[in-house]
Image (cartoon, rainbow, N blue to C red; front, side, top):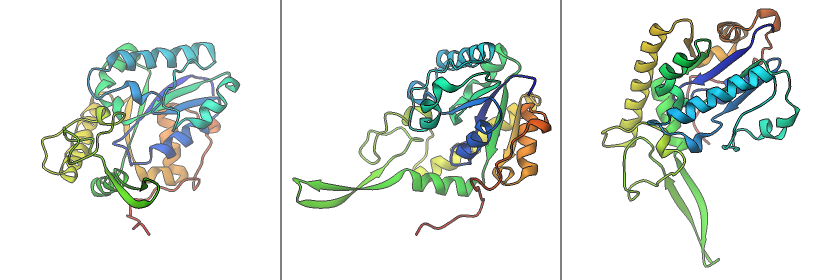
Length: 253
């Protein structure tokens, strides 16, 4: 791998981002985070944080050693565990849906950044988010009465916390919509996201490309993703079948 690459993964979420992160980190001399500082980022007015991330990516490539501020440890346990062992880094970046509003300012500062956007079927994405944001927790009262506590989060509608549960970390990271239900807002979110990203793909064809989630499931698809980033085929490492992404819904047990 002769060149050095900054790559940012995009997509609504629930669209294969963990698998993309795994594929990128499987490449030689790679260090790619997953939502590395989501606690500091919001959908609006986070230009300073985003540009700080970009500065850290650039410094990491220029020195070959990590200079990333990773405050969201849940998705980066392996990376943090081996942080001091990274060296000669030639591929660096982050995967996070919330970079979308900041693509213009990123490319204004660094025209070599590559954005890989994953896209999953709209209805499957919505259903996956509905499951993800509705959880049940076993709770006890005075150590005697046990019951299931329902936690129903809605990141896509402004609310007072009565109908849906507040989420201090993720509520700020998503755009908000004038919708009556969470499902309706999620459809607006999916449509808005890919309408916007489609326009940016046309505007920056050398920097941004949309890939179907199914592309992660074949060597040909992974080759197209890695080739777009700029990795020579002789240096590519494929991870087909390691984590499977399918467009068909799998009903929960």
